[in-house]
Image (cartoon, rainbow, N blue to C red; front, side):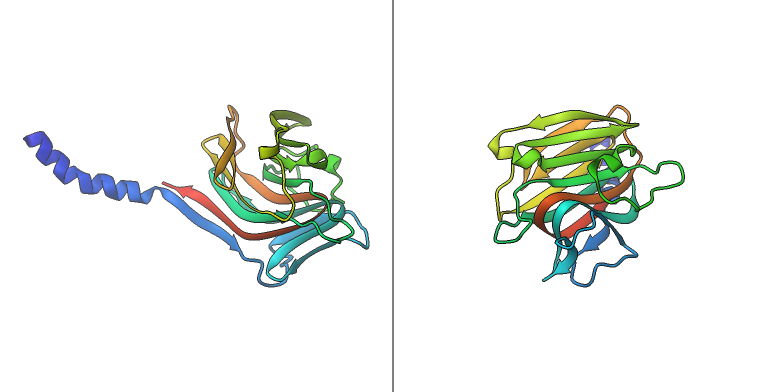
Length: 226
């Protein structure tokens, strides 16, 4: 009986402590105004057909070559990143269903992370980061890599249709890193999760694309609060 009474009085304390631990939003972007250079850094190949801009409330990556759009805010280790993204196929000169890509937990090299590249893919080899390339190689593969001092080890590799891209479909992407467990979900389906024995302590996030026209919206970033 005393044990039950003790648990009765302890329950509100346990509930209060549980409520203190939660995901807390630290950044949101609806892309409702011009792309703010104080928040975003754009790296792209110089070409007259390329446009990285906000159109009708969406971030549009209309690229002939590579393009990377960095969020300039450094993010903590335990993080959840969610957003919507679509590969547009119509009559655009760059339209191609390929490369719904992203960098996250990118680490500062000596001298700090600078945004000066022309977005050639090999220019990022020197960074330490996680990379998901969904529908890469002309929509034949979806891969997860950990970049580490020049090593770009493939940790997950899919080539089946359910893990590849469809034209003009809006995807809801969720990336989560929690105590070294990295996961990637698409439309509520967990594509993979992988436990990093030596996880990165946070870093920078970027949208990455190659020859395609993509629309991005409703970005939300949360961190875990104890």
